[in-house]
Length: 509
Image (cartoon, rainbow, N blue to C red; front, side):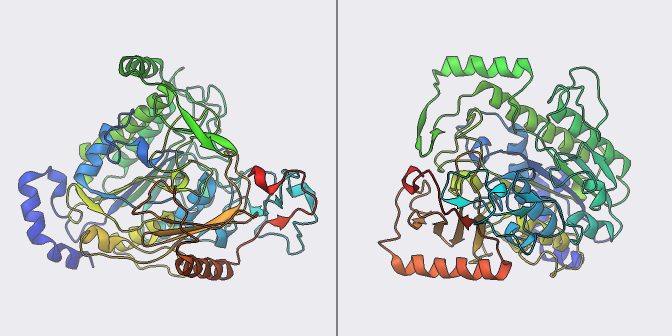
């Protein structure tokens, strides 16, 4: 397969070599493809300069990566919160299918291999911490089941060394990276944020990450661990999975960076502004100095890893993927960023909660600076990585993922009308509410589970999701509703239960 790919792109590669860095040289067919997968936490698509040149934040290394590879303009997370998206990357399956529908650690999670068959949410208030609301949140499985063949296990079976650094948040001890196919684990535990020690600074208080010098910064440390792994394994195939804790709360950054952005905010006359997004307020300006420092520090860590690939002579045979796990935090916990023009943010089924940067560099295949409108979501990375590496697919495992390798080869010729789905039967910490969504082509339907009317948007004409067209195009709403119904049946999606005596009216939401 890799030999045919080489032959099919030889002419364009020879042209690229004349104007591009050395890494654009075609990968020899005899050399296995390494993989560096980088996933940020809570980073919105508009937080990055490849997607938002007017961003308040600086991400020069992501800009360089996009200029040397491909940027997807319809990139998505599989869920508006973190753990389900991370599960989707690891399994290639919708969170509804794996029962991983909310962040791991919420009160209505179970830690077995499946949910109790006799659970009746409408009768059991112990899992309804929102007892005043119209629905009990659905129960869910709060760990990555061992029955899955994870992406790491699939690559390891073909001789890959596997490395994990950073945020795991896919289950308690016994379900950590080393239990799911990773040879090395640097910092991956059950926590959703860096909550031990001095948090983003050493000492970290993390049982899977030795403390560094006092004050060492966590993103830089994770990048150095990743760089060291790359150096050690430069002569054999590897998967380096860098999973940042950044830019998740707590909001902390090195003081020089914070001061840099405080000064910029003042010099540019920026202010903090919000608009209603019931039941919350949604930030509409990027002007948070601490958050800006967090974004830049994360970007610098990406740069360190990319430099390591060059330093150790493996950049020309390493697939690099960068993405995030949900949209930027705009309605809660300090509301540090704005996702405009996309609506709302983390925890919401609107575009601000699920739109993501997806930047891919496949040396010898992707054309520098190319752009694709192919719809990509978290489940799709697994089969794409296998195809790019010339490895056999595992269709019974990554059953919901679709390889986007065709788009990487030919961004203009590749087309996809495949629907994308979201199922979030929970009351989000950030103000989002139980519902489901489907996107097909330019159209997106949101079905709220608690009584609010259907919402239908044409994203090409209305990326801000301001104009509900459900009444104008009932036939399109019915078509997408049917797709959602089929999706829930196919995945056996667990639904929330009806609260027979809520004290809060539907109208509040």
